[in-house]
Length: 283
Image (tube, rainbow, N blue to C red; front, top):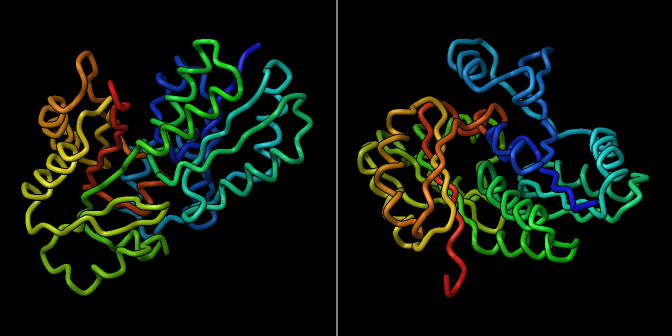
């Protein structure tokens, strides 16, 4: 038996990556009025953004239930030495609380550790990947927990939004509230800091905003893992991939992926983002 790694769908992990690493992804819920969807299960990103842009109702989100986490933990726990459950910032979602309560209530026949990444999107995904790689190489429970917590200290996530409208209406704007009222023809630049949304800067054009994203990656180099994320603009994301690949350690390449429905609810269309993990000291 081995250690199993669990995360949630706000990690935006591509399905093939999660499958190849053996990461179990628990979906959050997306609500359009009375219609409820499972993130990336029966509501995929393209369909979500079409509804977001062209529909009359703004979506809301909700965390998985305690019972859903219990079901996952008990199923995995029957064939595991331990479970490490890696999730988005507790300051932004009740998902961590659902996972923590489930870890206390589940009859999983193995220990369960719940880890707050203080991140969103692939900031969560990268931490889960780091934990899974150690688990898959035969690491024990303590080693996998250590890998996840070490990844948390080295990971960062930042974004360029077209507008703060969706973040503000969703109540997740945090310290970026200071940018409100100053955004005429300005692209807000945001980062996650101590689990909350903080301003990274503001740029008047998308070109300058993309340059700011690249400069921020350079400041954090060398990079051992990086994902370029987009909501509706893959062409710009591809340009970003080309511009940041030089900051990665030898043999590593950036990932490129679409931001999913839950994070897209707050980020909105035309968002670009980067999640990364800095290389360990000494390589």
